[in-house]
Image 1 (cartoon, rainbow, N blue to C red):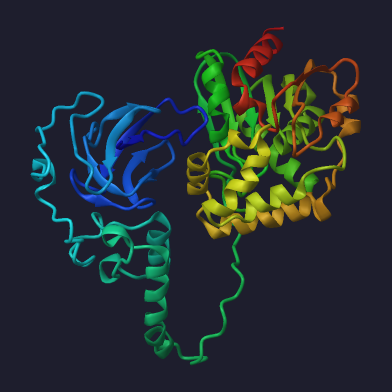
Image 2: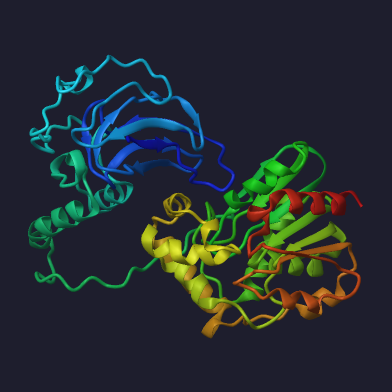
Length: 442
């Protein structure tokens, strides 16, 4: 039986995917794990790997077409397996074994692609995103690098080898230290500029949204889709997160000060404030510092209500430099490990390719969560606030124990969700949106 190639789900709220390009032509041989096609997400283009080894047939989606998640886009036949009519009724020439199938004729079984060298210009070169970035940082032209991956695809190892080969020339040009010193740990420089703010126009009182550690504003999308379409939104990216500049922060108080500065810039009147995890702690601090500007406060698993935290998971996410090292830590975010797919981890890694961003987040994590504990306490602030406050927590939260919610005074509306982990806004956005809607209207 042929293996079905489906449109994968690389985002929790993804319903369809746009097929960008095929890396393997109809009738060609592909190996399991090799790049098969690219899909376009809101963040970037992403490669999808072949689920099996064999020949590609019955391509159902052309570049540029949008396909529903889980729907087939092609089929892979084992070597020697007869290619018949597609299970989804795609028109194909009839094949009579043992005569060669017309669709397979252009490619001989014993003729693999002879060389990775015949790629005309850099825009069309087949290379992984990491390889492109490394080549750009090293000042190397992709066209001068031979790819050793499937069908001549340039991989990270190819670029690293090219950098090593280029080192003698670079060292010869250097006026000092003819012998290159060992590579130093990655360093990063603070960047100027304000924190990144994005908005969604709407009616009524705007909702200010502050994401958690090692996340970004994109993580609110599942909840946004469940909220009323006319709800005005203001999203803030934390420093060294998302599209905000990299900044050094000396502690939670300094981080809260940065947040107040951007809040004063974007909140032109009373607003609703929503925060998750570290963003929840910052939302609570905002409500305490600017009570007249915060009409309602909503907290999802907020930080700062107890010392316990899974510091290993946060540090693991911040430092992960590959999909394989990121995925196990991401699985800690949801109630069940299967809540995070490998494809979702690949999409998340696209936003974390910059080593400077990862280093900056590790440094921030070490300041806020030294020795794996929360170094700031916001329970007094929670007791001082007077505006209507909603708190949502997953009972299966592996990052912050839900019992920290018991620090809330009786006036706080507390909702504990069963079968939900640390990211209720992604695991059960409909329930969170319903609770949030009633809270904002009230």
